[in-house]
Figure 1 (spheres, rainbow, N blue to C red):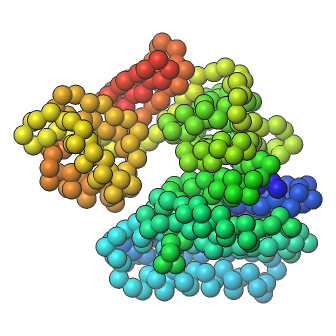
Figure 2 (figure 1 turned 90 degrees about the vertical axis):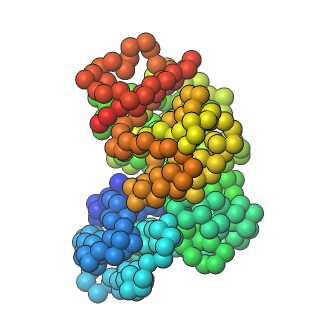
Figure 3 (figure 1 turned 30 degrees about the vertical axis):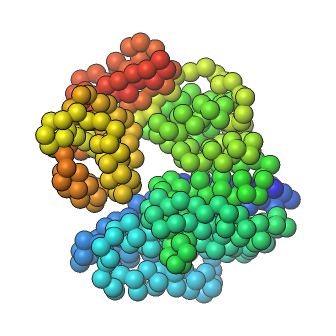
Length: 416
């Protein structure tokens, strides 16, 4: 079996879905399992819905209508009027609208998961129906019936034993199968999500449990690049990369790979291939064990919207292990991801990713025991295998807040 994963950019419009179908036609004999993300920027739009609902804003249903119209336009470009998929998608949105009639719970991550998870369900419903319409028969499966998780909403942990039983029972590789990335389900049957960009991780879970021959992630880039083309000119495509190096890059935030994706693949020795759905005939990037990086290059990773927390004890005591344990416990509670840490005798500075709705509550909780200074809206540049001075042109005229380096990697936090 092969596992394919298609991101939101590949299904952002009707033409994208038709292109996906052409790719699957070429591989239909392999009967792959196909994991698909929400369409285009749907996740961003649904995050706006979740925030508006949680904050009890009056325009929440207007935001839902924007999401519905986006999908209706795509469906209209694929199906004749009166096709059953119109009602199927409408019914999925009705479930969200019913939920929005209630009062939000105090826990924003829970509300986030119930609302945002609908994007993948709508996306795969449309794609599956279109494939059947053109004669590419497939089975649609709800990932929430397959991937079981704990109750840590927005960044759920997978119950591997139970998920393995369910996946092996329901997916036998006998036909083309369509399912969702990013989403799972708790033991109480509430939707959960695996973290932002978690669709890659979903695909890796399926590949690992099914002992797939390989996982192919289809992107709108020719492969893994040494820099994000949105921020850096003339990036270089990497042809081959080891799991170890890929894990390092994912840890620092390389956008092509989700940080959790690589561990289950490495554990099973399942190679990962990153290919272009724009030019599907061209070779992409091959990631596997014991592979040398080709070509040798530095990697540039830019993370935006960073929050810097400078934390000191109220009595100006030393920041020691018990303080750090307490601080990281609070960060975990709010799903804050630490991208850089720097200690001094009496303070600790952390650059973190945290949902904007959670920032003030996080700071308030830390302030019960610590003095907190903070900056928001910063950018973090990471250069792996850097050459001395290679960051100067990027950081020209930037106000640098914090910088550190080791033998292979340099990180610089600066004002946008």
